[in-house]
Length: 276
Image 1 (spheres, rainbow, N blue to C red):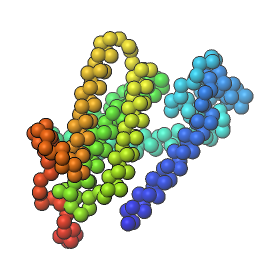
Image 2: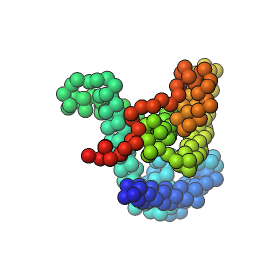
Image 3: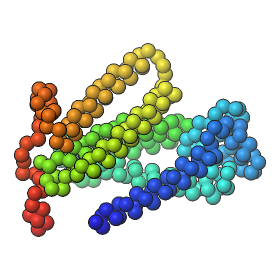
Image 4: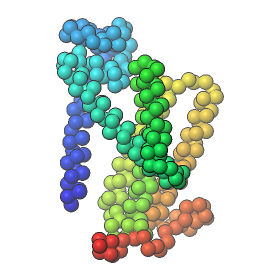
C-alpha cells in the first residue's frame, strides 16, 4: 500500500508539472508564426536568442531550444534559466537510468568477465560518447534534431516493453495470486493501445517531416514497418494467451511459435515462503 501511495504521489506531481508545461506552450505558441514570437521578444526587450525566430509568417516549429527562448521572451530570463535547469536535470536522470540499464543488460548478455571499472567505462562510453561528440562538434539545431529522432526511436520501442510486461503480470503461471485482475488488464491494455497509437502517429509525422522522400528510403521504411507491425502482432497474441485466451492455443501457429501456458513453479502461490 505504501509503495502504491508513493507511486501515485510521484505520478500526480509529474502529471501536474507536465500539464502546466503543455498548457503554457499551447497558449503561447499554438498557431503562432515565427514573426509573432520574434515581435513578442522585441516588445519585451528580450534579445537573448531572439534571432532563432526568423522574420517570416511560417508557422513556428518548436523544439527544446526555441521553447526555452520563448519562455524568456514571455516571462523573463528567470523562466528560461529554470527551463534550462529542468531540461538538464531530466537529461541527467534519463541518461543515467538508460546508461545503468544498458550497462546491466550488456554485462548479462555479453557475459563480460572484466574488472568492474572496465565494464562500467566500456558500457557508459557507448551510451554517452556519441551524444557528447554531437554536442561538441555540431550546433544546437542538429542536437535538437537528434533529440527528436531519439524520441521517435524510443516510442517505436515502447510496445516491446509494455506488451510483455502486461503479459507477464497477467500470467497466473508466473505471478500466481498476484496476477492482474480483470480491471487491471482492461485498463493496462487500453492505456497501452492509446499510448502506442499516439506514439506511432508522432513517429509517422517525424518521418514525413525530417526524412527524404527518395524511393529507396520509402521502400526501407515500408519493409521495416511491416516487420515491426508483425512483431507487435506476435507480442499481442502472446499477451492474449498469457491473459487466458486459451482458444488461441488451438491454432497451429500459436502452439508452434508462441506456446500455451504451462504449469511451473514460478507462481507465488505461497508468498510466505518468499518472505523469509
